[in-house]
Structure formats: structure tokens, C-alpha cells
Length: 492
Ligand SMILES: Cc1cc2nc3c(=O)[nH]c(=O)nc-3n(C[C@H](O)[C@H](O)[C@H](O)COP(=O)(O)OP(=O)(O)OC[C@H]3O[C@@H](n4cnc5c(N)ncnc54)[C@H](O)[C@@H]3O)c2cc1C
Image (tube, rainbow, N blue to C red; front, side, top):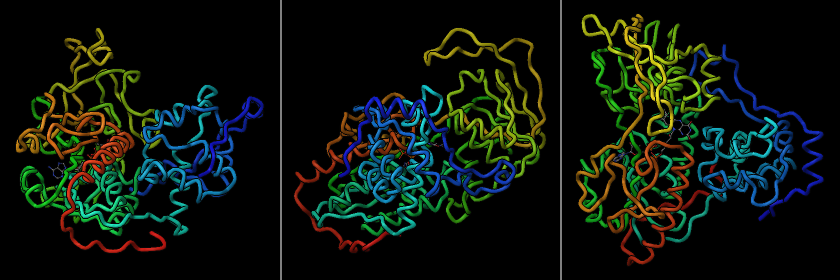
């Protein structure tokens, strides 16, 4: 264990005064990235990572970045090691608290660790996440990632859902020696890491690496099975699983009641993203057709999902992609950096407008009628409520529209499980440790909190997994299937 190196005032003052400029991670140019789904980030390398990490002030405890990271990664120690060029040990420091280093390194938004960096006050926060991605990839490239597993305990656990929450619980529990089976409704594991976040932000091979890690540790993935429909929770307990984790996310789109929203050419965001971003073999048969975007695409919504859809439409060859948002840019909920990238790639924004109806010919979308909005009094979210301006309607011809209006919980499991308490919105109710109202059933992630982040889902799942381990150890051992031995020395 490497000690955290607290900075003294002299070091802090010197670093701030002589302060080196940020070294940004390399990225593909907007021109080169517009036409394919390859990763935008090129990232740090052995020469640039120490320069960026070397800007760390080593704030006295408690370091704000550690506190802001939902996983409480020991960021100052990792950055100190990167500064010394010790990338393998830096990766290990991140992996002490995170099972999803290469993933969080790529997709964590700036408001987490980076937003809290003391150097933010000078407009120059350290790019912690991309440094994490660099060392995690470096460790894999050098075949130095080893994951150890305790001897089998004879306890069996079912994990429902294979997004970041499910994968975190599966890894935690398999490392403890429990027998873990993950049930996933989609054809491939990964949750939104595979089916939501586009490949240009998170390449699918990174998700595959994680699945392979877990399979090598003995986790069994059963895909194409929807719990609550193909099998109930009671069936799982009857099959000998002693505890169940629900990491089911929130995949139901918020559907509007606008006239014409069911025309061909109007897509729901997640449907659009998965059809565009994944090979047909990874998709259910009814979702294998690629979206037909034509020349002009309207994306309705203002969050990160809307940005992902707009950037995907650009990559599908659309010439004019416009995001229509009913409030102003100041109220936009998403990540500013994502907006900047979208603009660089040619996406345009229209603020203070909302669709009134979708217009079609022969069942296919041809235009959208919009109405202009003004901002009224704040609503329950604290943001000013958009109010339609009478008589301000206008029509825009479009070839396709993508609706990114948000997500809600799927009621399938709650409907078929007795004793499982859910909120009015259908979110699973849990205590601090992820215990649901049903003994032996635990939950975490978006299915509990509503749509959030990869890192928050993983952090909550880590807490639930600890509680599950304690619970499982109180259960008597059962006969469990033989688990293949861990592949040593490396999971390259
Ligand atoms: C387009 C998009 C982009 C995003 N980009 C980012 C980003 O850049 N950074 C970030 O931090 N977060 C991002 N997020 C949010 C992030 O992906 C989620 O917060 C995170 O994936 C939630 O993890 P989870 O494990 O709770 O659920 P999910 O990842 O949603 O996984 C749930 C899994 O459960 C499965 N499932 C559901 N019901 C059943 C059932 N009954 N039986 C079996 N399986 C079931 C689903 O098929 C799914 O695979 C994005 C989200 C979207 C939609």
C-alpha cells in the first residue's frame, strides 16, 4: 500500500505559482471522427500522463477528489505514482476501489472527481478520469492485471441485469468465492455500457474485456432471459439461489403524447442508439434494422442521451442534425463537454422550442411542427418552467426524429414478485446497504435511484455486494457447480 502524500503549503504554493498548463489527452479531430464509430479519445501516453498527473497539489486530507468520487478512489496516490512513471502501481491503486477502471476512466462526467479538483478554482482541473483510463489500459496491455478469487464458499447467488451495477456485484461476490450466475434479458451482457453509451465514447471491446474477466473468474452469464417474465424471483430461489441482486436499470422510454409520434422515422433514443451502434448479432431480431436517418434529423431533448443520439446521427451520414430543447442552454442538464464535442462535429442547437406535432405522409415522418417557449416560474426541479408562446408555431421539414425524453423503471419484476416494495415511479426501495423489503433480495443502480451514472451505480452496487456477502455467509453451503480455475498469471 502506497501512502497518500499530503502536500505542504510550500509545495502547493510552488505548484500554483509556477503552475504548468494542463496537458489535455489527445483526441481525434472532428473531421476524422464524424464518419465512424471509433473511439474519439486517443488519450494519454507514457510521456504526457506524468506531466498531467504532476500538476496534482496533493491537497491535505481529506482530498476533495477522493470525497467527490463515489467509489472514493485514492486519486492523489495514483497521480503521484503516475508522476513517477509507475503506471502499473497507479492502476492497482484505482483498482483497489473500482472494478470498472477503464470504463469509468472513459465515461465519468467532469462533475465527479475532476469537478472537485482544487485546481478548478484556477480553471485547470486535473484530467483524473482520462489518467485512470490510461493506466488501466496500460496495465492490461502489459498483461499485469490479476484478479484473485477466494476458495469456493458453497453459496449461490443470482444477479439480474448485467450493467455496471450487476457486473460490480458479480465481481465482488465471485472474488469472495461465491458461485455467481448473471441473468440478462438482452442477447449480450453489459447493460447500457453495451446498449446505450455509444462506441465512440466507450468502445465495445472494453466492455467485452470486463465480461471475459468475470467469465474467467467463473461467473456464468445467461443471456436472453427476462426475470419476472421467463423466470420469477421465486423460481430463482427454488433453483437454489440463496440471494438475488436486482441491477435492472431503467430502460422504459418516457413516451410523449404528441400527435404523430408513432410515425415511421420517429425513434426512441435507446432503440436508435442500439440499432446504430451495435452489430445485428448483438441485438434482438426485431431491433436489427439500422435507423434510416436521411438528410435532416431532429433530436428532441437536452440531456447527454440527446447528445449521444445527435452525434450518432452525424455518424450515420445525416447532413443536418439539430437538437431541439424546450429550455435555454443554461438549464440543460447534461455535460458541457459533450455539448462542445457535439458542436465540433456539426450538431446545431435550437433552444426554447418544443414539438407540437409530428407530420407525416404515407405513415412516414416528413416534418415537425414546433412551438416557441418562454421561461416561467421555477418548477419542482428548481429550473424555470417552459411555457408555450401562443401563435409562435413553425414547421421544420425533417427525415427522422429521435426522442430523448428520459427513462423510467420497467414494472415486470415488481409486478411478478410478492413483497418487493417499489416507489410510485416503480423504483425499487432499498436501505443504505441495498437490502430490499424482500429478505435475500438486494438492489442498486438506476433501478433504485432512477437514471444516473456508471460510477454511482457501481458504488451503490459495491455497498449492496458487501451486505450480500454478509447475508450469504449466514446461509448454509449448498452444492454448487464446479467453477473453472482462474487463468493465471494475467488477464490480458
Ligand atoms: C445513452 C446513454 C448514455 C450514457 N452515458 C453515460 C456516460 O457517459 N457516463 C455515465 O457515467 N453514465 C452514462 N449513462 C448512464 C449509465 O449508463 C447508467 O447510469 C448505468 O448504466 C446504470 O447501470 P445499471 O447497472 O443500474 O443499469 P443498466 O446499465 O441499465 O443495466 C441494466 C441491465 O438489466 C437488464 N434487465 C432489466 N430488466 C431485466 C430483467 N427483468 N431480467 C433480466 N435482465 C434485465 C437490462 O437489459 C440491462 O442490461 C448513459 C445512459 C444512457 C442511456
